[in-house]
Length: 87
Image 1 (cartoon, rainbow, N blue to C red):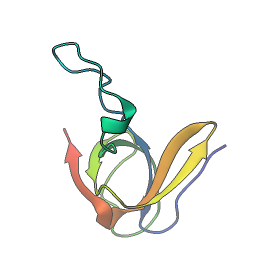
Image 2: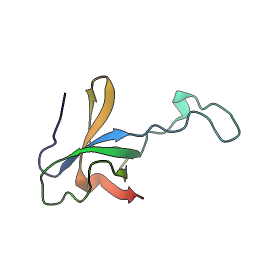
Image 3: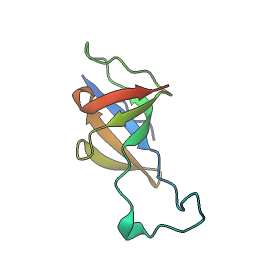
């Protein structure tokens, strides 16, 4: 299934946080924070869209709408909720 966001929205695939610390301790799911880094999968055709497919971005923690695409969690988010591009 292919999804193309409309207007000034982007489709993001969250990048999950590490499962263990540098010292080797495993982090339980209940202690993990919601991922704030994501990969841009698709972009809308709005004038405000400044990101490109394949870029990694940092976004607001509680923005967008979660959708599952072929069993994988994605987020459709307005570009105003994207804070930075990771280079």
